Length: 457
Image (tube, rainbow, N blue to C red; front, side, top):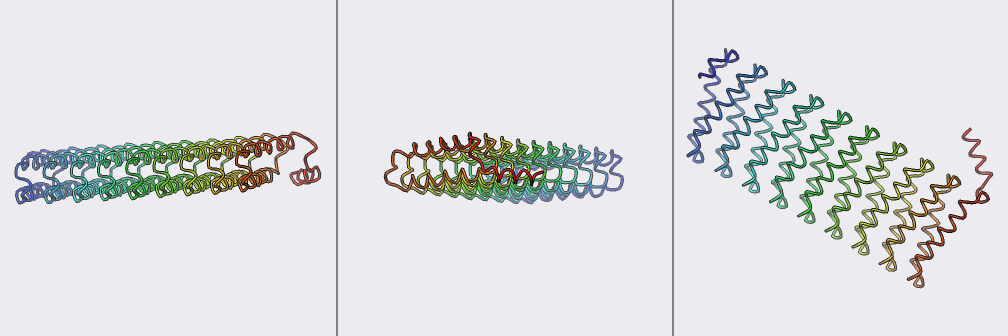
């Protein structure tokens, strides 16, 4: 009452302030779980009221602020999981209110900010997996709110930012695989992703999609028996992808596709028994591909195709019993091919064909019993062919044919019992032939070339 009567903002709401306090006391004293902490419960309520009445932003929403606190206390005292952490639950709520009322961006969304906190607490206390980590669950929410309210880009999307956090928390405590890593899952993800999204001028309108895709990644990670120990790496790599996507001027409109393709890669990696130990490498290589795609002026419109083809390569690699140990080499060679394709002015329109042919080569290599040990050499030689094709002015239009002929050579080499040891020689000789063909002015169809020049003119 001293607080209520000494504030110019409580002129007409004094009755409501006191009634809500008595409601809190009624709840506290009628619960068997509040035997020794009743004093703390009531003191925290007066703290909340002090905050509400000393802030110019709480002129009309004071009632809602206090009622939401009583709702939090109701949840805390009616749950058997909050026996010892009740103090932390309420103190974190006052922290949230402090943030909400001291930010000029929370003028009209204060109610939503606090209600979402109560939702988070409801989830935390109704799950048997959050017995000891309740404090971390709530603290991470306050961190998210701090980020959301201190960024000029989150003026209108604050609700979406918080709702997505509650979704993440729902997934983490309801999965048997997140028994010990719940804190890391929520802290790393939401805070990092939200920090990246509001601090980038490219994420002004796509913030919702960025966060929702993260929750999708967590759903995949926690629903797979193969992600028992690598969950942290899975999520961190996603934030790395978002960092790349939002720091590139070429990803202005394709950000959604970039992230969705990453989740597709993770789905493949976690649903294969061959990716038990190499999951980290699979995802890191995808981020490398995205880095290449977004840092090249030639990939402005073909970014989607570049990434989708990579996921196709991974699907092939992980569905073959022959790629148990060479998965890293398979994917790294693909990124090498993309580096070559995107750094050459001759690959402006044929990038799709270049990569698709590489996946064809890998399909052949992994479906043959003769390529058990020579898979690395097969793919590296293909990249050598592409290097030759793209560094020659004579290969502007015939690149597709050059690579297809190489795959034919490999098909022959791998389907013959006599080529067990000479596969390397077969391919190297092919690259020699191509080198000769592309370095000679006599090996081009001059009539066709003149026709194309006329068409361009």
